[in-house]
Image (cartoon, rainbow over all chains, first blue to last red; front, side):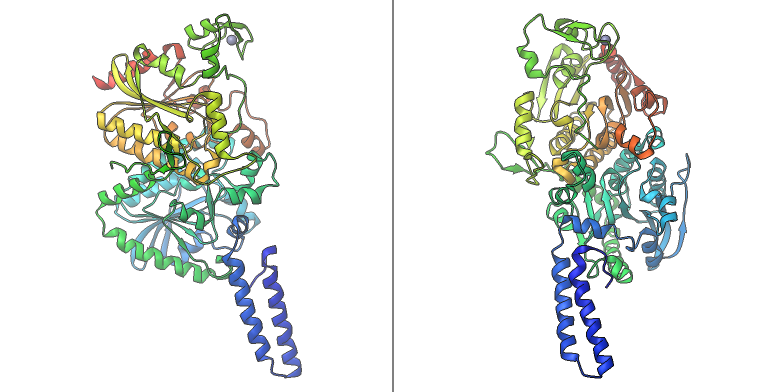
Length: 333
Length: 281
Ligand SMILES: [Zn+2]
């Protein structure tokens, strides 16, 4: 297993021990199997212990690992004959959001997602996965096309945020995201959204209104990045780890707070340790869900989608005893 | 989505202080610095009669300016914030809430009411910037959501007055999902073919801009209001250049096609009333 982060060091040390023992075995031809077996068991236990108990910041680090699979890799591995479609028909083609039709187990699906670059040059080209308004408008154009031809939509979310640039403001970044939230909530086809890396704020939500919203195990989703949160609440960048804790941004906490529909387990150590396994796991979930969602009448789908998002939030009534939170009203949809 | 950037410019006395303000109080116009008598400000709807500067006001003032005879029924008045994440930064969220309630006399950053404008029934939900920067938490989202339900049930238009720094960080992802909730509800209001007027006032930024504030059948604003998604400081840091003069003002946003019109606060009631009448007829 590749070692990247400090918290993975104990794993690295055990791996080195195993290597050494293997070298000794090879040199001396003495049977070291019992030692090796024990070490391998320890290694497995250590991995499970570490990755089963990651804190918020450690998950944030994993979610940003440069070798994690990105949107296009998921699309190309899950589907065949992917036809990428470009442009918002208005201003241009945003490279930070990609989309198009692909065929997954024989059924046509509209895939859309944030795309991060795989090397320095591509990271710039993809604007680090930070979309401009035309990215959100391209996404909406493609979703409306999917609706027109009655094809389900799958979105992959992986962004450090919508791009905070001058032109983005001129072209209505706020309006573009807002429009998507409203339009996605009433799409008459199944929509499944998956956070595959970073889910930062409105930039993530802008393609994140679905019948099913999943987080991969080691991703994060919140209203702000831990770094920005730290700079605002503590007025410095040193409290990012603390910010990652208090924001409750991990998949486990998001699921507990009923803000997502499920968590998809990653290969031990994270998606980058075994991208193929990750993609297959996710594909199975998506196929099962599509079968279920496609069986539902469109109106029911839309009503349930709206009701789900309308139930999110916790408020209290000052006339009720303290600390008794009331659930938001069920929608009339 | 920074709610914290409380620019003192434009904030006048809080509602509570005002109640206690004796006659004869003078304020300086935050823009031209000329002295303004309190009674003049009220009479002039908190617009400087020397330079036309629109001072920041809250729900109490907007309700009195817009509702006929200042008559209205407040909706969901007892709704208050919970603390679902048990949040604490340098201070506990619950303490911040108590402090804000004490200082402002408000229960959260939004009030909603049913009344009439130029004889037409409508619901107005109005944000209060003095309450934790007008930040959008579950209460803001839920009150807007229920206000829209009320409009659909009683077949009346909805006027949303936004004034917010964006998300309420102490509610983290709960705050984020209020964007989804309010936008979804607005889709239902649209399907019911009821008018939605979004009035964006100084300042409207972050997640509020990226949800209900930009979704009006008409989006309108007041002169000079700051309107944007990202805050000016963040943009400046990103592009490493100074921002052009007038960037993210209501006039700039109108010029780029995201507002229908800008209206002087003193003509606001008449103009919005005329629009609603136009739709009603
Ligand atoms: Zn003045």
